[in-house]
Length: 185
Image (tube, rainbow, N blue to C red; front, top):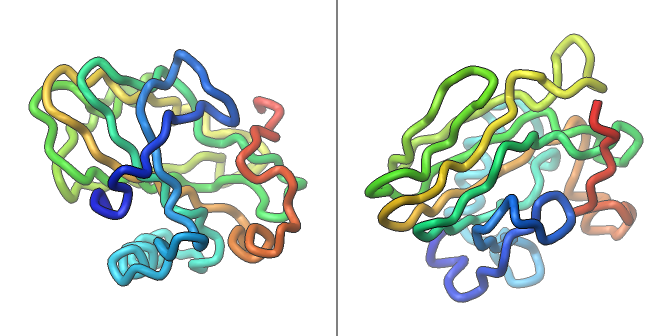
């Protein structure tokens, strides 16, 4: 995955805009450059959606991330998609570490007091909404990418929606893809 991102990394967005709260770089593994047809990407997507118990089509495209020393993503929540969009809300975040990090770079769940240390191959799955009310963000999964102190952190997000994400995306039927459409509930 790191090789696929290569020199294609660009400044990360927070929601749908540049922001000082997020300083990493990112690459969207999409259809247009063949990334989604890569056998490794396909195998990892299949495995992650199988673990989450959802169809592959409900997963967004991988967002591959690079954090260099001094880079971070302050406390945030991943549920930013409104229930009325074709893909529905983000129900899960599946996050995988693609490298070890010498110091810092953990994922801190601020409401739970838990920090996951980056380790090559380690993955974390968490809910973005309450299972009892899909219109309400899970209040305990605010998290942050802790500042990398030494080394480089590579990781990837795979966000999973309530409904098919890929078909509306590929058909151009969702003008709100990549935009924050959630009202903060």
